[in-house]
Image 1 (cartoon, rainbow, N blue to C red):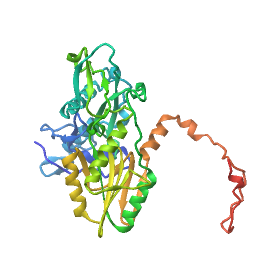
Image 2: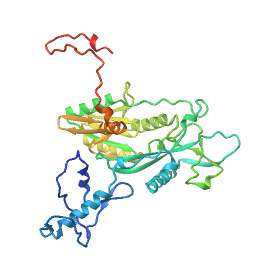
Image 3: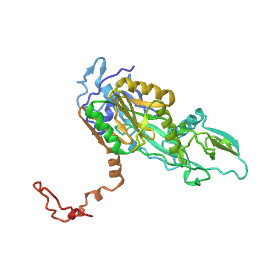
Image 4: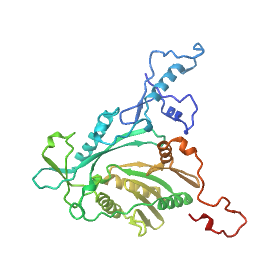
Length: 375
């Protein structure tokens, strides 16, 4: 027996009780939530007056509370899971099975995209070693959405001119992001976001790159090497390969990169304007035409595996709240990580400011001498 119901306790998003919003759900392997079945046998709780049990429909509240507690205890927060530094640590830790499945999923994604060609290793062949990088995909409330594992090349061992030639790729700026969001907010445009799955894995690579295979998961490749057909994370030229590939797709859709910031693409046709801000796999799109945005979404889905959101909630680690006439951008996750990284007593110590004790500030002054504020 299972049925949806509303949490019984009021909550605030700023507290850990926010997890009650997922009541009636159970944390699964990939971090998503599914059903949580209410126990058929009533659970005896340590309450003061068990005789005065309130029933919602046909389900006593004590059973609902028991199901809620079970759901909350089964959820895992990101701060409760340590991110492994290497593969051996990942496969021997508490969450080893989740990390192992994440590695298998990564290799499966590469195989599905015809990512490499297996060739025999010959004497004198110049290959690049690899390593695994682990991370956690989190939602806005710091709960784990997915365990992530990336198979990356050791690009620090690539010799320029031998393994790669050109490596330049433009980088998006936060100033341009603020400009795009401010314009969209003032003009009441639609704001959406999307991210691309396996970003670099879509990009063809021009040079010949040979990588040692992950024999921990593919032991049959002993004595073989992987001839890459597409760019791999960690390669020096991977960012450039992705930039050229994505620019080609957006260019064929009618978008033009700005001359000053080549990570900002603009489409303009009569009274229709579309702007796409791109930072590797995270993108923000704003437009005064919802129909044109829908057309771009359909076109992108035919070329790339994207995850689309009609509302901008977070991008590149920033939490964004777009409201009527205002937009708020915060970096609370980074702030929390800094506070957790340093002891609390250090934060309580007073430290003098690098300026004169009396700066002589006044709201009535028309001009200000900047000398006292020079470092």
